[in-house]
Length: 218
Image 1 (cartoon, rainbow, N blue to C red):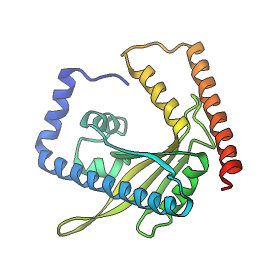
Image 2 (tube, one colour):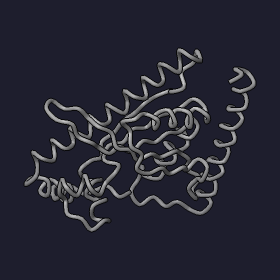
Image 3 (tube, rainbow, N blue to C red):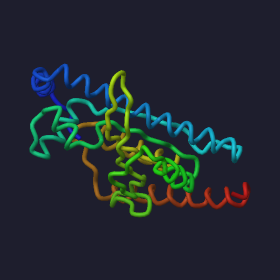
């Protein structure tokens, strides 16, 4: 992913300027949606911990797409930089990442979350059962969730990425190496080695999951 120049960033800000107030308000709605999602997962985790005497979630992280990233996506979709297009066309403006302890936890937590009557599933992509060609593994959910504001209710979209510690370790380092330096060349040999590391990570997840059943009896 190429880093934008100062001139390009200034261009993005100029595009936002006519819609600045509406844009900032909409970003606030997305932040509220992320908080709703985080709270739901923390409540599920608390109840799970009480029932099983262990915490299935290691960390919950959230991020809001930058104006530059939003602009890139809109360009790919041939859309103008408007708030209406952002809400209509981009489903991952708000992102929540849930890092789970074990592989089974990913699916059990996702099932519990999606079972709540105010959560609407829009799309699911299972990159754990069907990894990307580069070895990336994660469960992606695009959902819509209501947020209750001071005087209204709105439905907002959030992308949720659910993965294990091992998956997150690999994905984080892979991203760091690929995008640390603009113009970095990833050779075929490097790709093969990164894929091999992803495979080893998946094997580790499988082994730890089996050991959990054996030791904890879950």
